[in-house]
Every structure is written in C-alpha cells, then in structure tokens.
Length: 236
Image 1 (cartoon, rainbow, N blue to C red):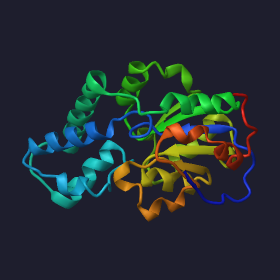
Image 2: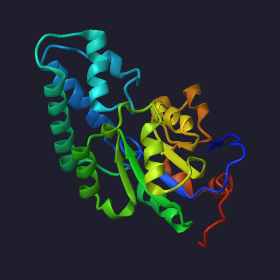
Image 3: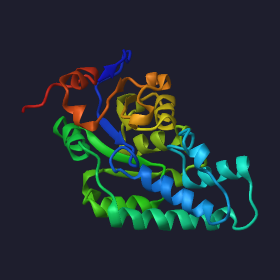
Image 4: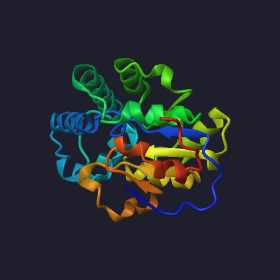
C-alpha cells in the first residue's frame, strides 16, 4: 500500500465503488468483446486498447473515441454499442468472477457504518447483470450509471450525483477506482480516492493523484486505511 497526505477531510461517511476492473474482473471481457466487434467491421483497435486510454469511459464514449481516431464505413455508433453491451452481458453471466477482496472491501466499510454506493460507467444492463450474478444488489444504497450524465469519467458528474443521492457531502466520500479516468473524476469531485490499478498500470506515476494506492482490495483492511479516512478501527 502507498498513501499520500489527504489534507483536512472530515471523517468519511460513504464509500463509492467503481465496478468494472475493481469489483468484477470484466476488463478482459471488455477488451475481447470490443476487439471482436470492431474486427467484424474490419477495424483493428488492439494497438489503442493497449494504452489504457479508454478505461473508465462509457461505452458510447469508447466507440466515439475509436471512430475519431480510426474511422470506418458501416454500422453506426448505436449498433456497435448494442453489440458490445450484448457481448459483455453474455460474458458476465458465462465466465465473470469477482476480484479478490471485493466482498471483503464492501464489508469493511459497512462495518464502520459507512453507506456504500456503486458508480459505474457501464450501462444499466451490464450493471444489473453483475449485481444479479453475484448477489450484490442489496449491498449498495445507491447504484448510478454514467449513461445518465452528459459526460462520463473523467468528468466528476457521476460521483457528485451519487453523493447527492446518498445525502452525503462529497468531502465525506471515499471512492474506490481501478482506472486513471475514475481517479481524476473522483478528485475533481473533491473526494478521497483509493486506487487499485490493474497490474499493467500499477507503476504509472499518474496514479499519484490517488490518496492511497493498493495492489488488491484484499489490502483494504489495513489499519492505515482506517486512520487515513478518520475512522475508528472496527472490532475484529
């Protein structure tokens, strides 16, 4: 675990979780489905995917991103979005797994009396599939999709809207994210950020924007996290 000073925050009252790549190991599905969907229309997106530029983006923003850089004739964006969403939902039900420490992390914050929320850039069908597949629907007081915002991450709209729905000041929220775009969005919302980046990007210095950087959610029970968030250690 690496931590940076977080300044003068009040004690945390809410924990807001990202979903893809943080709670569920869905990032490989996103890559595979996107590659297959675009390959079917003769477009190779693999070189751009390797840069991690689209992580944390909404699917419509991802399609627009690739169109702006690669261009193609054929299906419009809506059709490609539909194909990607269908592919992801199928993959979640067929082979998705929760990442190590996902449930334990939710339990950690609940044990300290924090309300928990989910704020994902995914579409509602994908979010619903994950919540139903792993029985997590009743673990979150609020579930937000960035499709309801004009702009997705790294814009802070989804986090500000989630905090408002929880009735919690942004300064009293901690966000758990795996993507750089998500960390930027949370910081723009004036929230604390715990980053759990994919191993491929773990040494990216840009994740220094996070208040804490973990290699796994299994590290969330570290007493240093409690102190950082102004929480009393829970009984063990």
